[in-house]
Image (cartoon, rainbow, N blue to C red; front, side):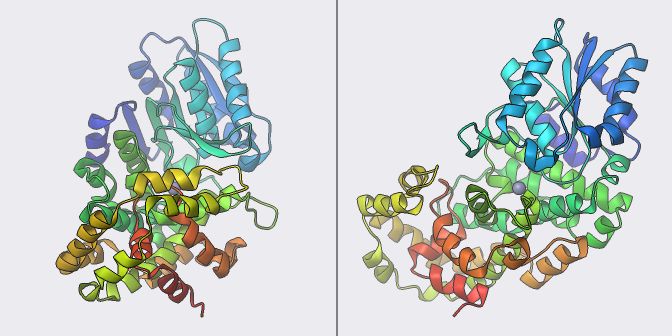
Length: 446
Ligand SMILES: [Zn+2]
Protein backbone atom coordinates (compact mmCIF):
# COMPACT_ATOMS: atom_id res chain seq x y z
CA UNK A 1 0.00 0.00 0.00
CA UNK A 2 1.38 3.40 -0.88
CA UNK A 3 2.12 5.98 1.75
CA UNK A 4 -0.63 8.25 0.39
CA UNK A 5 -3.25 5.51 0.53
CA UNK A 6 -2.18 4.62 4.08
CA UNK A 7 -2.47 8.23 5.12
CA UNK A 8 -5.94 8.47 3.57
CA UNK A 9 -7.00 5.23 5.27
CA UNK A 10 -6.01 6.58 8.68
CA UNK A 11 -8.53 9.39 8.16
CA UNK A 12 -11.23 7.36 6.41
CA UNK A 13 -14.42 6.81 8.38
CA UNK A 14 -15.68 3.77 6.45
CA UNK A 15 -12.82 2.20 4.51
CA UNK A 16 -10.21 0.18 6.41
CA UNK A 17 -8.18 -1.38 3.60
CA UNK A 18 -7.52 -0.47 -0.04
CA UNK A 19 -5.15 -2.62 -2.08
CA UNK A 20 -4.14 -1.62 -5.62
CA UNK A 21 -1.60 -3.71 -7.53
CA UNK A 22 -0.68 -6.66 -9.70
CA UNK A 23 -2.02 -10.09 -8.65
CA UNK A 24 -3.85 -8.83 -5.58
CA UNK A 25 -7.16 -10.59 -6.30
CA UNK A 26 -6.18 -13.49 -4.03
CA UNK A 27 -5.81 -11.05 -1.16
CA UNK A 28 -9.59 -10.82 -1.13
CA UNK A 29 -9.74 -13.75 1.32
CA UNK A 30 -7.20 -12.55 3.95
CA UNK A 31 -8.72 -9.07 3.78
CA UNK A 32 -12.19 -10.56 4.19
CA UNK A 33 -11.03 -12.47 7.28
CA UNK A 34 -9.23 -9.48 8.74
CA UNK A 35 -11.99 -6.89 8.28
CA UNK A 36 -15.09 -9.02 8.64
CA UNK A 37 -13.96 -11.10 11.63
CA UNK A 38 -16.14 -14.11 12.31
CA UNK A 39 -18.09 -13.74 9.05
CA UNK A 40 -18.79 -17.13 7.52
CA UNK A 41 -20.91 -16.07 4.55
CA UNK A 42 -20.54 -13.75 1.55
CA UNK A 43 -22.82 -12.71 -1.31
CA UNK A 44 -20.91 -11.87 -4.49
CA UNK A 45 -22.80 -9.25 -6.54
CA UNK A 46 -21.76 -9.06 -10.19
CA UNK A 47 -23.06 -8.97 -13.76
CA UNK A 48 -22.24 -11.56 -16.43
CA UNK A 49 -19.10 -9.70 -17.62
CA UNK A 50 -17.67 -9.01 -14.18
CA UNK A 51 -18.52 -12.55 -13.12
CA UNK A 52 -16.42 -13.86 -15.99
CA UNK A 53 -13.39 -11.64 -15.28
CA UNK A 54 -13.33 -11.79 -11.48
CA UNK A 55 -16.63 -12.63 -9.73
CA UNK A 56 -16.41 -16.36 -10.33
CA UNK A 57 -12.83 -16.46 -9.11
CA UNK A 58 -13.65 -14.43 -5.99
CA UNK A 59 -16.41 -16.90 -5.15
CA UNK A 60 -14.02 -19.85 -5.60
CA UNK A 61 -11.35 -18.23 -3.42
CA UNK A 62 -13.84 -17.60 -0.64
CA UNK A 63 -15.26 -21.15 -0.83
CA UNK A 64 -11.76 -22.64 -0.80
CA UNK A 65 -11.21 -20.79 2.46
CA UNK A 66 -14.35 -22.31 3.99
CA UNK A 67 -16.56 -19.26 3.53
CA UNK A 68 -20.02 -19.88 2.12
CA UNK A 69 -20.07 -17.72 -1.03
CA UNK A 70 -23.47 -17.08 -2.59
CA UNK A 71 -23.90 -15.17 -5.81
CA UNK A 72 -26.30 -12.58 -7.19
CA UNK A 73 -25.82 -11.99 -10.91
CA UNK A 74 -27.55 -8.88 -12.23
CA UNK A 75 -29.17 -9.51 -15.57
CA UNK A 76 -27.15 -8.33 -18.58
CA UNK A 77 -27.89 -4.89 -19.94
CA UNK A 78 -24.85 -2.77 -19.38
CA UNK A 79 -24.13 0.16 -17.15
CA UNK A 80 -26.86 2.32 -18.65
CA UNK A 81 -29.49 -0.22 -17.85
CA UNK A 82 -28.52 -0.78 -14.23
CA UNK A 83 -27.87 2.73 -12.91
CA UNK A 84 -31.31 2.72 -11.39
CA UNK A 85 -32.46 2.58 -7.78
CA UNK A 86 -34.67 -0.47 -8.37
CA UNK A 87 -31.57 -2.62 -8.91
CA UNK A 88 -30.21 -1.45 -5.57
CA UNK A 89 -33.50 -2.66 -4.08
CA UNK A 90 -33.03 -5.96 -5.96
CA UNK A 91 -29.55 -6.40 -4.46
CA UNK A 92 -30.83 -5.47 -1.00
CA UNK A 93 -33.63 -8.06 -1.28
CA UNK A 94 -31.12 -10.69 -2.46
CA UNK A 95 -28.93 -10.07 0.58
CA UNK A 96 -31.93 -10.13 2.91
CA UNK A 97 -33.26 -13.34 1.29
CA UNK A 98 -29.93 -15.09 1.89
CA UNK A 99 -30.98 -15.59 5.50
CA UNK A 100 -28.89 -15.51 8.67
CA UNK A 101 -26.22 -14.85 9.53
CA UNK A 102 -26.40 -12.03 7.01
CA UNK A 103 -23.77 -12.50 4.29
CA UNK A 104 -21.10 -9.85 3.66
CA UNK A 105 -21.97 -8.22 0.32
CA UNK A 106 -18.97 -8.34 -2.05
CA UNK A 107 -19.43 -6.12 -5.12
CA UNK A 108 -17.41 -7.32 -8.10
CA UNK A 109 -17.72 -4.67 -10.80
CA UNK A 110 -17.20 -1.05 -11.65
CA UNK A 111 -19.24 2.09 -10.97
CA UNK A 112 -22.75 0.76 -11.22
CA UNK A 113 -22.36 -2.64 -9.50
CA UNK A 114 -20.45 -0.88 -6.73
CA UNK A 115 -23.09 1.83 -6.32
CA UNK A 116 -25.96 -0.68 -6.27
CA UNK A 117 -24.20 -2.81 -3.64
CA UNK A 118 -23.13 0.28 -1.68
CA UNK A 119 -26.71 1.51 -1.41
CA UNK A 120 -28.16 -1.96 -0.71
CA UNK A 121 -25.60 -2.53 2.05
CA UNK A 122 -26.23 0.93 3.46
CA UNK A 123 -29.97 0.26 3.70
CA UNK A 124 -29.30 -3.02 5.52
CA UNK A 125 -26.68 -1.47 7.79
CA UNK A 126 -24.08 -4.00 6.60
CA UNK A 127 -20.46 -3.16 5.84
CA UNK A 128 -19.40 -4.43 2.43
CA UNK A 129 -16.38 -5.09 0.26
CA UNK A 130 -15.68 -4.18 -3.35
CA UNK A 131 -13.47 -5.78 -6.00
CA UNK A 132 -12.90 -3.30 -8.82
CA UNK A 133 -13.13 -4.47 -12.43
CA UNK A 134 -12.48 -1.20 -14.30
CA UNK A 135 -10.50 2.01 -13.71
CA UNK A 136 -13.51 3.96 -14.86
CA UNK A 137 -14.32 6.51 -12.12
CA UNK A 138 -13.45 7.65 -8.61
CA UNK A 139 -16.55 6.41 -6.82
CA UNK A 140 -15.18 3.14 -5.39
CA UNK A 141 -13.99 4.82 -2.21
CA UNK A 142 -16.53 7.65 -1.96
CA UNK A 143 -19.63 7.80 0.20
CA UNK A 144 -22.98 7.82 -1.59
CA UNK A 145 -24.38 6.08 -4.66
CA UNK A 146 -25.33 7.96 -7.85
CA UNK A 147 -28.52 6.30 -9.05
CA UNK A 148 -31.68 7.19 -10.89
CA UNK A 149 -34.57 7.58 -8.47
CA UNK A 150 -38.01 6.00 -9.11
CA UNK A 151 -39.11 9.52 -10.16
CA UNK A 152 -36.43 9.55 -12.85
CA UNK A 153 -33.93 11.99 -11.31
CA UNK A 154 -30.25 11.07 -10.96
CA UNK A 155 -29.45 11.64 -7.30
CA UNK A 156 -26.73 10.75 -4.83
CA UNK A 157 -28.23 8.36 -2.31
CA UNK A 158 -26.37 8.56 1.00
CA UNK A 159 -24.60 5.37 2.10
CA UNK A 160 -21.18 4.49 3.53
CA UNK A 161 -18.15 3.67 1.39
CA UNK A 162 -16.91 0.04 1.32
CA UNK A 163 -14.90 -1.30 4.24
CA UNK A 164 -12.39 -2.99 1.90
CA UNK A 165 -11.42 -2.22 -1.72
CA UNK A 166 -9.35 -4.57 -3.89
CA UNK A 167 -8.16 -3.35 -7.32
CA UNK A 168 -6.17 -5.99 -9.20
CA UNK A 169 -4.48 -4.34 -12.20
CA UNK A 170 -4.71 -7.55 -14.23
CA UNK A 171 -8.48 -7.55 -13.77
CA UNK A 172 -8.70 -3.84 -14.66
CA UNK A 173 -6.85 -4.57 -17.93
CA UNK A 174 -9.70 -6.82 -19.05
CA UNK A 175 -12.16 -3.90 -19.12
CA UNK A 176 -12.93 -2.15 -22.42
CA UNK A 177 -10.25 0.59 -23.03
CA UNK A 178 -12.92 3.26 -23.03
CA UNK A 179 -13.50 2.61 -19.30
CA UNK A 180 -9.91 3.50 -18.37
CA UNK A 181 -10.15 6.52 -20.71
CA UNK A 182 -13.21 7.59 -18.73
CA UNK A 183 -11.45 7.13 -15.39
CA UNK A 184 -8.36 8.97 -16.59
CA UNK A 185 -10.50 11.92 -17.72
CA UNK A 186 -12.32 11.89 -14.36
CA UNK A 187 -8.92 12.13 -12.65
CA UNK A 188 -7.67 14.85 -15.02
CA UNK A 189 -10.81 16.82 -14.05
CA UNK A 190 -9.30 17.33 -10.61
CA UNK A 191 -6.87 19.79 -12.19
CA UNK A 192 -9.46 22.51 -12.99
CA UNK A 193 -11.65 21.32 -10.07
CA UNK A 194 -8.71 22.07 -7.76
CA UNK A 195 -8.40 25.52 -9.36
CA UNK A 196 -12.09 26.16 -8.63
CA UNK A 197 -11.47 25.23 -5.01
CA UNK A 198 -8.36 27.44 -4.73
CA UNK A 199 -10.22 30.39 -6.23
CA UNK A 200 -13.29 29.91 -4.02
CA UNK A 201 -11.17 29.63 -0.87
CA UNK A 202 -9.06 32.66 -1.82
CA UNK A 203 -12.24 34.69 -2.27
CA UNK A 204 -13.72 33.55 1.03
CA UNK A 205 -16.46 31.59 -0.73
CA UNK A 206 -15.42 28.08 0.37
CA UNK A 207 -13.88 26.32 3.34
CA UNK A 208 -10.32 25.11 2.93
CA UNK A 209 -9.63 21.56 4.10
CA UNK A 210 -5.90 20.94 4.01
CA UNK A 211 -6.07 17.15 4.45
CA UNK A 212 -8.78 16.82 1.80
CA UNK A 213 -6.68 18.91 -0.53
CA UNK A 214 -3.53 16.89 0.08
CA UNK A 215 -5.32 13.57 -0.33
CA UNK A 216 -6.50 14.40 -3.85
CA UNK A 217 -4.01 16.94 -5.08
CA UNK A 218 -0.60 16.13 -3.58
CA UNK A 219 0.14 13.37 -6.07
CA UNK A 220 -2.35 14.34 -8.75
CA UNK A 221 0.03 15.76 -11.32
CA UNK A 222 2.22 12.65 -11.06
CA UNK A 223 -0.84 10.42 -11.46
CA UNK A 224 -1.98 12.06 -14.71
CA UNK A 225 1.38 12.73 -16.38
CA UNK A 226 1.74 9.38 -18.13
CA UNK A 227 -1.26 8.99 -20.47
CA UNK A 228 0.85 6.85 -22.84
CA UNK A 229 1.52 4.41 -19.99
CA UNK A 230 -2.16 4.34 -19.06
CA UNK A 231 -3.15 3.74 -22.69
CA UNK A 232 -0.65 0.86 -22.82
CA UNK A 233 -1.88 -0.33 -19.39
CA UNK A 234 1.69 -0.36 -18.06
CA UNK A 235 1.89 -1.40 -14.46
CA UNK A 236 3.45 1.75 -13.00
CA UNK A 237 1.34 4.31 -14.84
CA UNK A 238 -1.86 2.31 -14.37
CA UNK A 239 -1.21 1.77 -10.66
CA UNK A 240 -0.49 5.47 -10.00
CA UNK A 241 -3.60 6.51 -11.87
CA UNK A 242 -5.85 3.97 -10.10
CA UNK A 243 -4.46 5.09 -6.74
CA UNK A 244 -5.28 8.66 -7.79
CA UNK A 245 -8.89 7.63 -8.40
CA UNK A 246 -9.06 5.92 -5.00
CA UNK A 247 -7.61 9.02 -3.31
CA UNK A 248 -10.28 11.20 -4.93
CA UNK A 249 -12.94 9.03 -3.34
CA UNK A 250 -11.16 9.04 0.02
CA UNK A 251 -11.11 12.83 0.08
CA UNK A 252 -14.85 12.90 -0.59
CA UNK A 253 -15.35 10.34 2.18
CA UNK A 254 -13.25 12.47 4.53
CA UNK A 255 -15.05 15.74 3.77
CA UNK A 256 -18.51 14.24 3.11
CA UNK A 257 -18.48 16.49 0.06
CA UNK A 258 -17.50 16.14 -3.59
CA UNK A 259 -15.67 19.51 -3.45
CA UNK A 260 -12.16 17.94 -3.63
CA UNK A 261 -13.00 15.95 -6.75
CA UNK A 262 -15.46 18.05 -8.70
CA UNK A 263 -15.72 21.58 -10.05
CA UNK A 264 -17.52 23.29 -12.91
CA UNK A 265 -16.49 20.56 -15.39
CA UNK A 266 -18.70 18.15 -13.43
CA UNK A 267 -21.67 20.55 -13.51
CA UNK A 268 -21.73 20.42 -17.33
CA UNK A 269 -21.84 16.63 -17.15
CA UNK A 270 -24.65 16.74 -14.57
CA UNK A 271 -26.60 19.11 -16.82
CA UNK A 272 -26.35 16.64 -19.71
CA UNK A 273 -27.50 13.84 -17.41
CA UNK A 274 -30.47 15.92 -16.26
CA UNK A 275 -31.56 16.12 -19.90
CA UNK A 276 -31.11 12.35 -20.32
CA UNK A 277 -28.45 13.07 -22.91
CA UNK A 278 -27.39 10.19 -25.13
CA UNK A 279 -25.02 9.95 -28.07
CA UNK A 280 -25.56 7.36 -30.79
CA UNK A 281 -28.19 5.74 -28.57
CA UNK A 282 -25.92 5.35 -25.53
CA UNK A 283 -25.41 7.22 -22.30
CA UNK A 284 -21.94 8.78 -22.44
CA UNK A 285 -19.80 7.48 -19.53
CA UNK A 286 -19.34 9.95 -16.69
CA UNK A 287 -15.59 10.47 -17.10
CA UNK A 288 -15.85 10.79 -20.88
CA UNK A 289 -18.30 13.67 -20.45
CA UNK A 290 -16.24 15.22 -17.68
CA UNK A 291 -13.08 15.09 -19.83
CA UNK A 292 -14.68 17.21 -22.56
CA UNK A 293 -15.59 19.90 -20.03
CA UNK A 294 -12.21 19.64 -18.32
CA UNK A 295 -10.74 20.72 -21.63
CA UNK A 296 -13.35 23.47 -21.95
CA UNK A 297 -12.80 24.80 -18.41
CA UNK A 298 -9.04 24.78 -19.00
CA UNK A 299 -9.66 27.11 -21.93
CA UNK A 300 -11.83 29.35 -19.72
CA UNK A 301 -9.08 29.38 -17.10
CA UNK A 302 -6.50 30.42 -19.68
CA UNK A 303 -8.62 33.50 -20.27
CA UNK A 304 -8.96 34.13 -16.54
CA UNK A 305 -5.18 33.93 -16.06
CA UNK A 306 -4.60 36.30 -18.97
CA UNK A 307 -7.07 38.89 -17.66
CA UNK A 308 -5.90 41.92 -15.68
CA UNK A 309 -8.06 41.63 -12.58
CA UNK A 310 -6.19 44.43 -10.83
CA UNK A 311 -8.03 46.84 -13.15
CA UNK A 312 -11.49 45.47 -12.23
CA UNK A 313 -14.19 48.16 -11.90
CA UNK A 314 -15.77 46.95 -8.67
CA UNK A 315 -18.40 49.71 -8.56
CA UNK A 316 -19.66 48.70 -12.01
CA UNK A 317 -19.96 45.07 -10.84
CA UNK A 318 -21.89 46.15 -7.73
CA UNK A 319 -24.22 48.35 -9.79
CA UNK A 320 -25.21 45.29 -11.84
CA UNK A 321 -25.59 42.98 -8.83
CA UNK A 322 -29.25 42.24 -8.12
CA UNK A 323 -30.95 41.72 -4.74
CA UNK A 324 -31.69 38.22 -3.47
CA UNK A 325 -35.36 38.21 -4.56
CA UNK A 326 -34.46 39.07 -8.15
CA UNK A 327 -31.67 36.50 -8.11
CA UNK A 328 -34.12 33.85 -6.82
CA UNK A 329 -36.45 34.62 -9.72
CA UNK A 330 -33.56 34.06 -12.15
CA UNK A 331 -32.66 30.82 -10.34
CA UNK A 332 -36.29 29.65 -10.49
CA UNK A 333 -36.44 30.20 -14.26
CA UNK A 334 -33.29 28.16 -14.97
CA UNK A 335 -34.83 24.77 -14.21
CA UNK A 336 -38.54 25.67 -14.52
CA UNK A 337 -40.57 22.82 -15.99
CA UNK A 338 -37.93 20.19 -15.25
CA UNK A 339 -37.82 17.48 -12.57
CA UNK A 340 -35.36 19.75 -10.74
CA UNK A 341 -37.50 22.89 -10.51
CA UNK A 342 -36.26 24.01 -7.06
CA UNK A 343 -32.54 23.45 -7.73
CA UNK A 344 -31.78 26.99 -8.92
CA UNK A 345 -33.47 28.74 -6.00
CA UNK A 346 -31.69 26.46 -3.52
CA UNK A 347 -28.31 27.27 -5.09
CA UNK A 348 -29.05 30.99 -5.10
CA UNK A 349 -29.97 30.98 -1.41
CA UNK A 350 -26.85 29.02 -0.51
CA UNK A 351 -24.44 31.16 -2.54
CA UNK A 352 -25.94 34.63 -2.46
CA UNK A 353 -23.88 37.52 -1.10
CA UNK A 354 -25.10 41.09 -0.72
CA UNK A 355 -23.37 44.08 -2.27
CA UNK A 356 -21.09 44.73 0.69
CA UNK A 357 -19.86 41.14 0.82
CA UNK A 358 -19.39 41.16 -2.93
CA UNK A 359 -17.38 44.39 -2.67
CA UNK A 360 -15.08 42.80 -0.08
CA UNK A 361 -14.65 39.71 -2.27
CA UNK A 362 -13.84 41.63 -5.45
CA UNK A 363 -11.57 44.15 -3.72
CA UNK A 364 -9.73 41.18 -2.21
CA UNK A 365 -9.32 39.68 -5.67
CA UNK A 366 -7.93 42.96 -7.05
CA UNK A 367 -5.50 43.40 -4.19
CA UNK A 368 -4.19 39.83 -4.12
CA UNK A 369 -4.48 38.88 -7.79
CA UNK A 370 -0.72 38.26 -8.28
CA UNK A 371 -0.66 35.67 -5.46
CA UNK A 372 -3.99 34.13 -6.47
CA UNK A 373 -2.86 33.98 -10.09
CA UNK A 374 0.37 32.25 -9.08
CA UNK A 375 -1.52 29.58 -7.13
CA UNK A 376 -3.93 28.98 -10.02
CA UNK A 377 -1.12 28.85 -12.58
CA UNK A 378 0.74 26.26 -10.50
CA UNK A 379 -2.40 24.12 -10.34
CA UNK A 380 -3.58 24.31 -13.95
CA UNK A 381 -2.31 22.67 -17.12
CA UNK A 382 -2.48 24.29 -20.57
CA UNK A 383 -5.69 23.40 -22.40
CA UNK A 384 -3.67 22.01 -25.31
CA UNK A 385 -1.91 19.63 -22.92
CA UNK A 386 -5.23 18.56 -21.37
CA UNK A 387 -6.50 17.83 -24.88
CA UNK A 388 -3.32 15.91 -25.78
CA UNK A 389 -3.60 13.68 -22.71
CA UNK A 390 -7.29 13.02 -23.33
CA UNK A 391 -6.54 12.03 -26.93
CA UNK A 392 -3.67 9.74 -25.90
CA UNK A 393 -5.95 7.64 -23.67
CA UNK A 394 -8.69 7.68 -26.32
CA UNK A 395 -11.03 10.17 -24.68
CA UNK A 396 -12.75 12.94 -26.67
CA UNK A 397 -12.10 16.62 -25.95
CA UNK A 398 -14.85 18.58 -27.71
CA UNK A 399 -18.64 18.77 -27.06
CA UNK A 400 -19.46 17.61 -30.62
CA UNK A 401 -17.65 14.33 -29.97
CA UNK A 402 -20.19 13.39 -27.29
CA UNK A 403 -23.21 14.61 -29.24
CA UNK A 404 -23.41 18.06 -27.67
CA UNK A 405 -22.62 21.46 -29.20
CA UNK A 406 -20.68 24.58 -28.33
CA UNK A 407 -23.97 26.52 -28.24
CA UNK A 408 -25.38 24.06 -25.66
CA UNK A 409 -22.16 24.41 -23.65
CA UNK A 410 -22.56 28.19 -23.66
CA UNK A 411 -26.16 27.89 -22.44
CA UNK A 412 -25.07 25.40 -19.78
CA UNK A 413 -22.36 27.77 -18.53
CA UNK A 414 -25.20 30.12 -17.58
CA UNK A 415 -27.02 27.23 -15.86
CA UNK A 416 -24.00 25.67 -14.14
CA UNK A 417 -23.82 28.42 -11.52
CA UNK A 418 -27.35 27.50 -10.40
CA UNK A 419 -26.60 23.81 -9.84
CA UNK A 420 -25.00 23.65 -6.39
CA UNK A 421 -24.06 25.69 -3.35
CA UNK A 422 -20.50 25.58 -4.72
CA UNK A 423 -18.56 28.69 -5.74
CA UNK A 424 -16.53 28.22 -8.93
CA UNK A 425 -14.62 30.35 -11.44
CA UNK A 426 -17.86 30.66 -13.42
CA UNK A 427 -19.40 32.45 -10.41
CA UNK A 428 -16.62 35.01 -10.40
CA UNK A 429 -17.18 35.61 -14.11
CA UNK A 430 -20.91 36.02 -13.45
CA UNK A 431 -20.30 38.48 -10.62
CA UNK A 432 -18.05 40.55 -12.83
CA UNK A 433 -20.24 40.48 -15.95
CA UNK A 434 -17.67 38.52 -17.94
CA UNK A 435 -19.28 35.08 -18.08
CA UNK A 436 -20.79 35.24 -21.53
CA UNK A 437 -17.77 36.89 -23.18
CA UNK A 438 -15.18 34.55 -21.64
CA UNK A 439 -17.18 31.41 -22.40
CA UNK A 440 -17.90 32.47 -25.98
CA UNK A 441 -14.23 33.20 -26.49
CA UNK A 442 -13.21 29.85 -24.99
CA UNK A 443 -15.65 28.10 -27.32
CA UNK A 444 -14.69 30.16 -30.38
CA UNK A 445 -18.25 31.50 -30.67
CA UNK A 446 -18.87 35.02 -31.91
ZN1 LIG B 1 -16.30 12.45 -11.47
